[in-house]
Length: 436
Image (cartoon, rainbow, N blue to C red; front, side, top):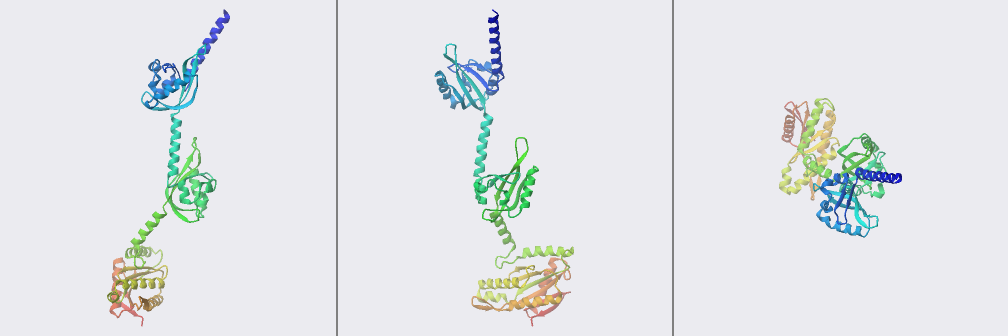
């Protein structure tokens, strides 16, 4: 009798243990008939699928099946009747709210004491987060690999740890060429910049859309816009950095072309009027603040009888004359002098540095002499003559408009005096110097 009582107690204890395991499980543990009718429904099943035990016991399991998965139940039940186990089957079920849930399921047949299959036990685990993580991982990988931008990662010591197709296209290195190599391979002999980027990463700092240069596999320098971000592990510890680089070389070239077209004369290649006036204004401010020098010397030139070239030989010939004049001015002046085509056949020069009067006169004589040298254009020897007005800032004027006006007056005074000469502007009186 005592033995029976003890066996009964052990049996009850085991039942309680089993029930406790079922009730405390994080996985849904469900028992159903071979027709798919729910016999038991643990708390985890309530949490995962949204239905209470009262709502599901006695109901068909099809209640939690999406329409496109209804056929699965018949296939599963048929396997169970044959005594087969369905292990780690990944599928989709439906929450009470209609939300779809990714689950991993193991279903086993339940036997009675005679070995007859009487029911099925089902253990279902919610793997929605894992499936979503894998999906996102695949999506991110697809985005990275299909990007035209270079997307790569580096360790804290600057070792390249990942490399996408865009990086291969921009820099010319294949993944096998560069993985495990130093980021310095991409830098144009500037290790300080690499150190700067790595310091930013280590201090949890980012760099956004900063423009710089990098070097491709052939050693050519390319312009890039880069964004650098630190990479962290699950504990928040920085383990490296990600870099997104966009090749902006063509954009930079286009911008430079636009800038050049806006600031330089298309015919002669000299600075245009706008750029000259901006530069002159800047230089005048420098003189006012006594930063660079005490005065400026400005030359205003006009080709004598230029209209005759156009009338006698055509405008194409006149254009060649202007190009030749620009070439002579460029070769005669110093690199630091600013030369511009002011308008038509007028040129203007801002001389750099200090010029003693005697040196300035020698320079003017040489300039006129160089322009007087015959030059063949379309088989015709072309001999240029030029009238030049000379003004100084701030001696002759305080404002740009007055300075240009007086330079123009001095130039016309040189023309009136016989041309092919230069004239200084001095207190509304002119001093004319001829080549003779």
